[in-house]
Length: 469
Image (cartoon, rainbow, N blue to C red; front, side):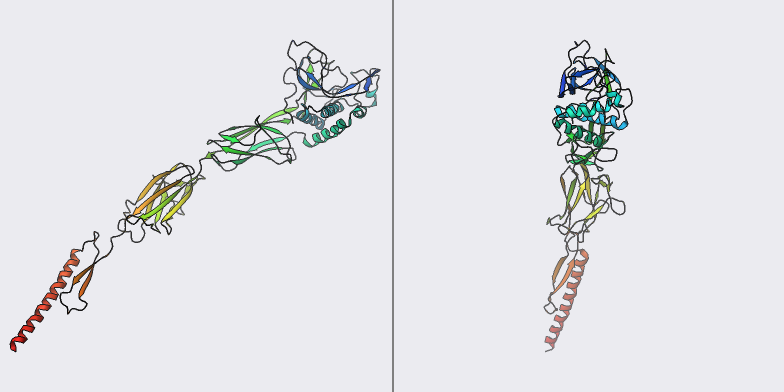
């Protein structure tokens, strides 16, 4: 479908251009011509004319053909040769055919378009309008006679154009729709262009000129256009945001409800009124959305300070450095059932991952409660924490260390008397720095003293027994 502008938008020839003979454009010469004014005519021309380097189409059969340098200016709504309004469906058919075929370079299509234009604008009201004795101002277009002179390809084109107009005439409804969800910068998503008939079916083969801001659109022709599919489905655009506010605009030509003519400046009633590649409205559609950077994730490792082994079962709070909730990729807050910043727990390997985070974003990981065996070094008023910034599409790796509780230290004390059962007394000290506590040392001294006393008593008894002997 060729692009077009409304007929009547300015002069067809530049002021001061010398008048030259009519220049026939694309179409077919037919013989003999339809007689009128009592004259047998050798030929008729069914096709376009060239006026001011522009292809135009005549709409008042038998009036003088326009010279190539003729001055034309915007006229009124297209009427029949008799001055009557065109029926709505006929006016819509003409608008559509001018839009789609007004720039055709196919001779059969051009002859068919000229024939249909004369058939709809200069059809006889009754048989008297075909009286060959009538002057050119009053003669009607003999539809059957003219059709019969066309070559078969042009005859076929007449039916094809007529059916096309009946199916695709306007008014059309056009729209452009962005995805419902915000996009990710650098990732393509589908936008939709629809061009529909009043019954909701899609219009095929419509070129749409696309421009984009903060985005790139795939599949455009060199002139920035893309065409609606032949099956009538909506047109899908692959749009990749390059910034935070991707916007796509489309412009297309749709058939006007009624076409308008151009008329000769010097002799508006004696020279053909013409229509050009007009009969349409320029329609603009657009939509805009927002785009965010690619999501990121945080990988947290909870490890023993000395062994570097992972610590399972540690509760960690995920928040912003100010204590507020972190943001997920969809813009919602990462919170738990209590509405507070979410808490995660390390797994068997002492690790946990928080994915789908908005980027860039500074994240703080704070220990909520220590694992068993690490309670001593945990300060609830100043819990272990670490911060870092998660970047678009990246993984932020954070590590939180814990110091294990002081281990239980066994103390072995000689019993001092082989007669004491077990030979040693075993005590345990649990001082935070690994030293034996004074209380336990006192207990050991007491135990040793008791053993010594008991030993001395036994020794004296042995000496006394020996003296008696």
